[in-house]
Length: 419
Ligand SMILES: Nc1nc2c(ncn2[C@@H]2O[C@H](COP(=O)(O)OP(=O)(O)OP(=O)(O)O)[C@@H](O)[C@H]2O)c(=O)[nH]1
Ligand SMILES: [Mg+2]
Image 1 (tube, protein in one colour):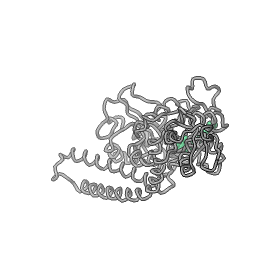
Image 2 (tube, protein in one colour):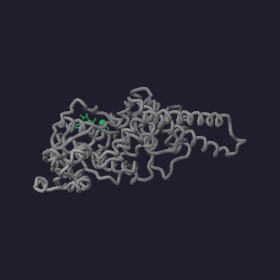
Image 3 (cartoon, helix red, strand yellow):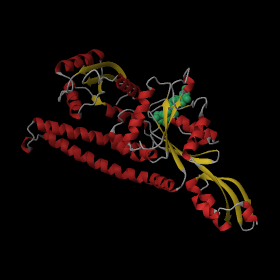
Image 4 (cartoon, protein in one colour):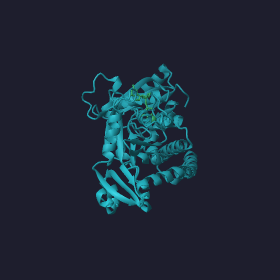
């Protein structure tokens, strides 16, 4: 799609209770992200969507005149309409008509930088076009009576296209599984290790990458910063960094942001990327508290977590961008600013408290042959004191009960050991 296309937003709703201004506003923001200029809007209240054109006949004529008067080169359907409607309305108006899913896919396409993200987006786009071809075929076949004898050459052609698209998807999935292999291996290694995992989730542009960068700075790892940018879907790939707070370690994952009703094709093909969130021990829901619609966006994140089967995980809600607020009254959660650094230390303390609850202390004597145990659990257990003698070391270790269990048989009071 050419940049700065001029679009008319189309919206159909059943009744006034279904009219969702927030949802429309989000569509306008998505257009801005795709550099599409919204030059007009048209909506209709209707009990059902017209099976051919979405809008009823009179509205279609109104839309036609609007297109002419405003010189629009695109109609974007914000409300869900069947792909066949998009297709036929486009033919009828002789203009590009697209749905919201295609718009989001287009934004992802322009943002994808790595091979993995590019493949994931291409698969999602092809899956979406496949559903369009299938549905358009089915509807047209139904309208013509559906028998094989009634199939026209157009339908045969689309069956062929359907097959070609399927083949291409198969080929791309193979390529993707090769690219993802390394990531999966690293992920499996991390799963086996005892180190805890924290994932940043939240609405797109809420400040997830900025938060990761703030935490990296506090760990003296400013060089390992990730890209933060004032744009929707700046991050499409997952980045992971090892962080430490008061000698407790955890892995922090920064990943793709959410919007409402994230297309299922994207969720499906970004499954490996999103697994960073669904397999974490703790999620940080980063909310842009300066956004008037922050409550809806907070909810959208929780909804999306359900879709990716991550809603059973513990979540800490983090209200970001408080430097833009006069007051933080009414925000029940952690309040931070990635711009000024306010609240970041408290957040890190809170993270480690959730990750490492119920800590215990134990003094043990470890013979030198067993000293490797300490290295293996170093990321979870803290060594408070360590004293060597000829046969081994006396250590006082501190950490979660579960992780201290293997040390029980070495438990020794220092006095006992000396005697
Ligand atoms: N004023 C202010 N701006 C912030 C703060 N945190 C982040 N930003 C800005 O918000 C914009 C988005 O930040 P990112 O960190 O890229 O947001 P994200 O959640 O990673 O976004 P996606 O990767 O696109 O989902 C950037 O322009 C940041 O500079 C903050 O605390 N205060
Ligand atoms: Mg980001």
